[in-house]
Length: 532
Image 1 (tube, rainbow, N blue to C red):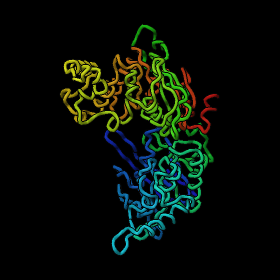
Image 2: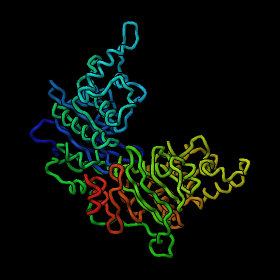
Image 3: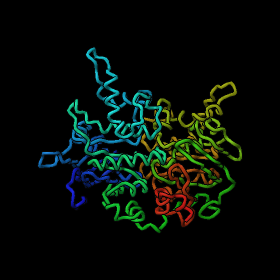
Image 4: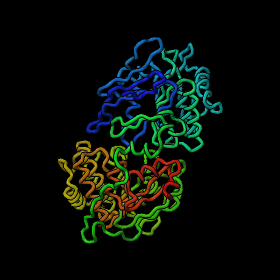
């Protein structure tokens, strides 16, 4: 199938590209092509494979099968890029601008741009004058007001992103490189303000008008319709469709991203309480959040979660879902507003106070944020509560610790050689069960869950679902973030949808459908869509 604009030769194509990460098939026989001077969007739900495809094209990931080919001036046949070779992709003119600003904030703008090739004097010292001249030649093409001698960390996020784009324009001619011809923008505006986003979109237009091909990975509908020429939709790692942006509308794109009739709600899990019908009735307000703000992250968040209630948080990458849970738990020191548990206000920026008030938090990344890999599984289970299990002199009561660990091992069916086993010896699913088991208990009144089933198998997912529902039925107020639509719909009693750090709307009952979630999450005017 020809997915290209018929009147312009193909500049770059990915043919039959597949990529697997463990049990996850990120890309499955994807074929898509790009033409010169266009802004071509890659869209899809979280996990659809759009960022993975961008990284395969730029050489950051080595595909398992398939080929990426680029048309080289003066050559009759398109050239196949070496799989997984950043150097080969770069020398051919392919660049990538990452979502995360992987830079050195303490160094100057010029030093950041020149780290790959520092100019030297005859004595072997860094030639800072030449370094700054090179950087200025790149940066000032996009923003003449940026001082290349200033520390990068002193710049606003939008200007730091501009510097990253400027770095992608470096042809490295001194080291045999070539001018950029294709630039992959991977969620470039996820952390930018409206004004910064507008400037970045204008830069993208300018680069495309200059003949560059921009592959624009994004989930933001407004940006797609504002600057892109064509859009390719991926779903579950598979190619769905390529369309001219002028010939498609938002509802059609949403339907392509989801892949099924959108009016049918997904089935929900029955309550495990059994006495009050399919779902136990929510009780008193247990978690109350008022006017929660965090610069560049959250804006005016107000929400409530009641006893025996699971409130889902929907939205896409960069919407502020994880940032919201961090702020509620006290991990965001810049956050303002009020958080109350059981009517008692919790001081901001104090996770310990949140724990003492009965709040538990299962973060998105269990390896970096959740588990202590140098401690045994048993200690991981009880580490937040060791002070409660110790005497007033701070002496650990080992018998009480062992009893609690054994109880949790049995209840949560953790498969490990014993409490002394290190988390690294367990499967991902059992690691996740350890983290969930840590916070589920009589002491937890509010449970924050961020992607609780990420990276675990179907069987373990089912166990986790039952545990979460059982915790809610026992009286816990649960706030759940999940990128998996069926999971979010199945577990949630109601759903709040985030869009650009704000709550775009609330969905209840029959309103809880994939189309309504995605419409609020991607709409250029989420609040208005919610009201409608």
